[in-house]
Length: 466
Ligand code: GLY
Ligand code: MN
Ligand code: MN
Image (cartoon, rainbow, N blue to C red):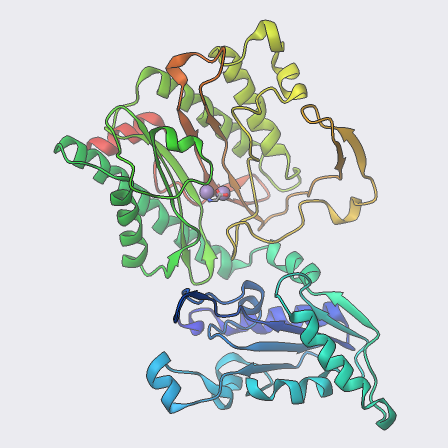
């Protein structure tokens, strides 16, 4: 990835916004992700830390960023080293980093223990991300104790440690124009990958071939990489038939059979930004009656969730709208027995839909697929209410849900998952359906950025005939 793909002014503006938040005497310290061993001497593919990348766009491992409240910033990075670069690839190096990244200064990462205490000297608070990087607190403690050892020479040790996730989560929650553009592109690539997988599935079955989940996974990967995405944003789910009822199923080797549905939940990551799309389609291109009936309920639930998504609404509004439609659909199709569970309000009140719909409808989407950002409204955190959960009886603390604002990005992903159970009509057994799109909140509603792949049942059938 080329960090210069992103306009550098964005990073400078983000660092300036952070500096303003931590105040003139605050210091923020942030490492990128560690490299992780996979097996023996092979590492997992390196992926930078999202907070770190958000502030400087630097993609190499073994690096730290320090942002000071006066607006200056210091990068610690791997030094130039011809031998290491011959094996592992080019390094930017501290000499080139200030002009390439706009940071005020850069040093070799090996000097961080020696330099960090001086950067912390006189600060009122040191900010770092709590509970994110193993061993980070110990490193910070080491630098603070190094500074304390110099107290008799006039060094001043910060008196507060603060969680850097707080301000960065708030900043990342609202996507700027560059981020929205990148996310639209990521979603479009993913949409095209879904189309590719759907069409290959129908084509192989028409040709009498043995289709496996991995064939469809291969199509997704092909399209992601073909269009410049670096990697999937998360492990792709390609679930044939009953596997769709396993929420975190991974693409494996199960046969994809004519007459069954396939659920694909897959999205690419592009330049640090995730997409997250789910489509459920008939393997042979034609829904059966029960599949279509259930599919249309889930689609109607998604439409309701889309209608409930706009600036000023609460984060939970799309979920509640979707659950109402799903609950009504479960009653109408006889999956819930009206005489036992009552009407739609009773179903929602008792959470009787839960055996068929056990996850939430939305999550924030951004650099991380389950992106950072508070789900409660910061201004209203004091007004918590405790209620008893209808199923477990446990006390649940309800804090007012986040008010949606223009530029927030969330998924809308209702589903229904039908496992065999007493009273559940056999025609629906083992059907798992989820429909997931990515929405940018706008003042008037929301922009669905992942609709490059059809979602209506008729349109899916038409696509698969193609
Ligand atoms: N693909 C993960 C999710 O839908 O939340
Ligand atoms: Mn999702
Ligand atoms: Mn998903």
